[in-house]
Amino acid sequence: MTGPEHYRKAEQRLLMAWEEDRAPEDVRHLVAEAQVHATLALAAATALTPGVNSPSRGAWVSAVHDLA
Image (cartoon, rainbow, N blue to C red; front, side, top):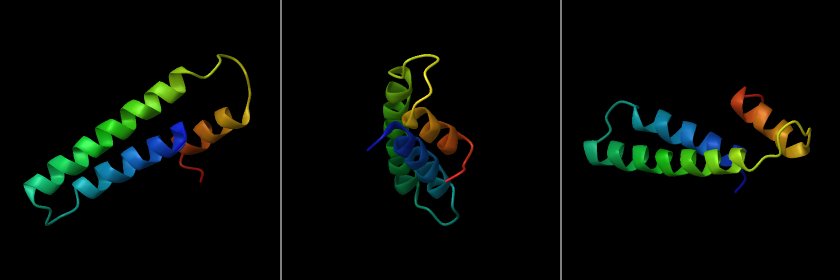
């Protein structure tokens, strides 16, 4: 899974956590999953070479700006 995919998964899990009629234990589980994906996304973003345009940088722009 790429960094942008982890970013999107974290957003998805948080949105799912706050849907109505979720049991508290399900909310906790989804928030924990979101945290893991967000951490992995951050690690991937940190590994990018500063100032270099690459396909992975374009994927990040798309993920952050919800273009995909």
